[in-house]
Length: 242
Picture 1: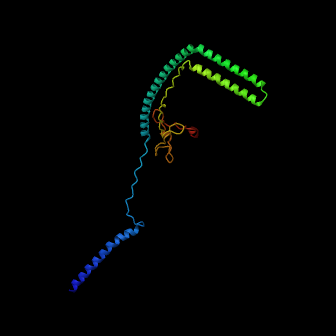
Picture 2: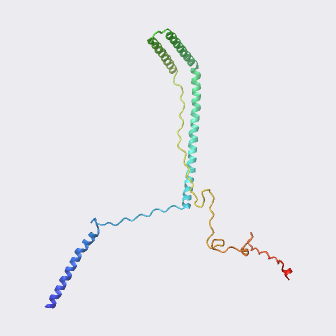
């Protein structure tokens, strides 16, 4: 009986510890989060597009250059067609204007002559009236009369010219779209600012580099690729010493 009671007591204690652990675990997780809000997975940064290589830029430039040449050819054709049509219309206008001027030349000369007579008479009357004026009011009235006579002569001339009919009007210049823009060639990274190609350094380990042995006379070669033999040393005073 004592062993049964000890076993039951041990099972009860284990169950109690299990329940307490199950309740404490979520509480500790919330305690670590100061906001208490459910945590969401952090967004992963999308990989940035890698920059194009010079060869890729050059290939894209060649494609755009061909497209530009085609667009420029079409633009030149449209411009030439529009200018040719405008030139034809301008020639027609000049011919019609010359015919209208020739037809109404005598009438226009008569209208202009009458206009000059009316203006000259109005100025002569003004000078006479202004010279005889003794008061300021009389001088103002003379000036007003000159303005009224000039306006009447101008209006009469305009009405007479309009009675001849509307003269031909010149054609409007054609509206041409802007010229296509030529693409810009990408810069070659192997070129310097002066436009000269950079000299690539020799690979490491080649003679002549810092830390490498300098080539001796036996290592020199001529233009044909053959080794140049070193010049024989002079014997000097070997005979004299003997």
